[in-house]
Image (tube, rainbow, N blue to C red):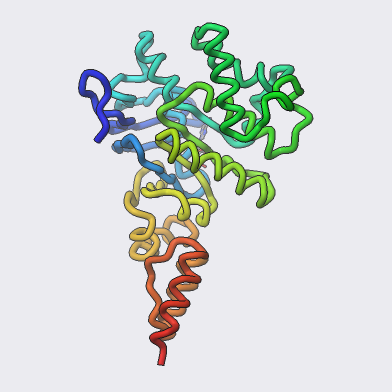
Length: 295
Ligand code: ADP
């Protein structure tokens, strides 16, 4: 476990969260029911669940965009619903990249757009400039080529890189991504996920990823939470969930990764293939190795 100054656990803790939209109106809807979970420093957490299961509502609690109706959310030990400077500081430790983050771009140049968040933190010009340069380098946008360009003339994948650079420049401890590859072609998707993996590995950013894409989730996440009707129905390692809890996934309308299904059907036909498989590469390896044992 990683501790902050003062000995608090570096983590986001949701303590018995309930969230109800439109309290007292005819549209009242309880979207989260009794959620308790600790997201620890260093995790790469995948959040999956059918449409309407509560994923967006859940992630909007992580940096205080939504305040729980009952229960409490703490980031590094601080209740993020509070109006103190300390609470504000902790909310800034949780970066958010929403679906279509390019819709959040609005400054005239790429550099100004990335500088927006750090400026709001009240950092001096030199530090803002340092962070912008570093964030651009990190997402592979050459400063001299792109800094003064308009963000609106870029490709979809590049715009998303600018949006991610804006979050990187905030130097967050936690990064929440809600369907970050929506609407991108396979090449753009690959680019974005390479950035996310790099942030996790090289900058020790704890990642919370919401995605419908089981391949992406199973390739990257080391822990999975499955939501259904506002509750956590599964919480564990991807391999364990995909191999041993498929009936639950089916009940709640979540797809199983195609490679897991393939391996299962090969095993059912008597092939001696390992089911320690999460990606296509793993599957190839398992089939090549397993094939040698077939009579
Ligand atoms: P997901 O992200 O898994 O699709 P959401 O968190 O968006 O799920 O939604 C959870 C539930 O809350 C759904 O039943 C949805 O209709 C409802 N909901 C979401 N946003 C609102 C809102 N602004 N007002 C009322 N109900 C909402």
